[in-house]
Length: 428
Image (cartoon, rainbow, N blue to C red; front, top):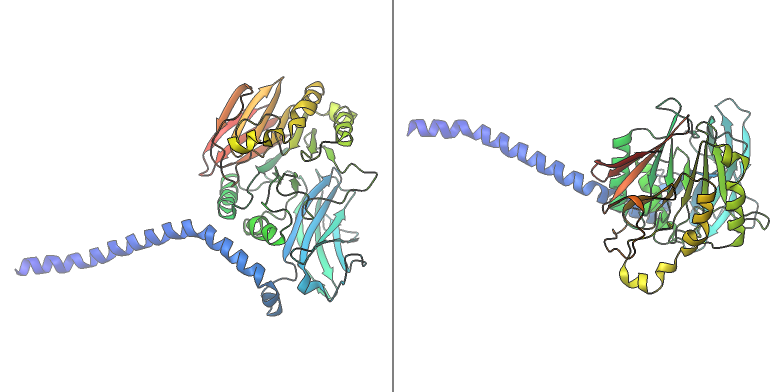
């Protein structure tokens, strides 16, 4: 009896220790599973109570921190937002002169230049969106700092590199994501994995459909801006494509003048790569002429590689069968019928798209076509067409891509799944 009692007494600390370890492991498991969900709920709460938080000194005047959007080879737009309930003492209508100024300097040396921010009013959520353009930049070499002044209020100083190789000498690394839409929890997990898998990236490409509802300022905050901010991804330039869900929107689209196509193509001089950004929502002769002239230009033809970015891919094979038969198969048909022959004639090397919610790649007429619309939206499992592309691969899973451009003009593409596993790789 005495021996049994002593043994049970000695086992007690060991059992307590094992229970404690099991509890800690369970808590860690639940935390990792619930953390993204908690972040999203916090974003919703912060959106609805921002005015109160600002008045108590717990929030910035800005309801969306600055995001850098590439608009040409020598210019970016700094995009940020103030809610109407915070801005009404500054502006009474969108037509008034902007009281908001962005001050910036290249390489931190000056001269400091002021850029007045244009106002775009989102009436649905009473948000004032500001765009301040920084022009005459060389995207491959410029490092700059800036701050924003609104009346007597002054923001912190923000700093950024613009397509400047920072980790690998003579190499630019782009994170590539698309079609997160309303899946904020899944999108947060994808961004976290992108950051932990790749480390520092020089820039980002979003392939479109960043939100489900283009006119919702709240959705742009909770489903896109806040996940980027939490993962430290607002301080590098973004190439933003227009999807069918997130455009037109004041958050991604610059106003187009009557004499301007609004389409973008430019040469990244550091890697001698020509990049063209197209709008698959717009079947117009103006865009057709822009494609032909830009790809035939000296800048494009003297480049080592030519890359086209467009939301709706030419060769969509997976979709919801019902809507597909009901007419959605015609969305972007002109991309395949009108633009693919131009791509082939002008020696395009790579076309990257989103829209279809899985991963595909394959070659046609020597061009590699990639679909990478897997940053959160509901996956597409049903095959509705078969274009029989060469060297084809399909992966039905959430994912992100990493595009590497080197100084010799080489293209290195890697595809990672949500768990960080590399699932595809090719070099052009």
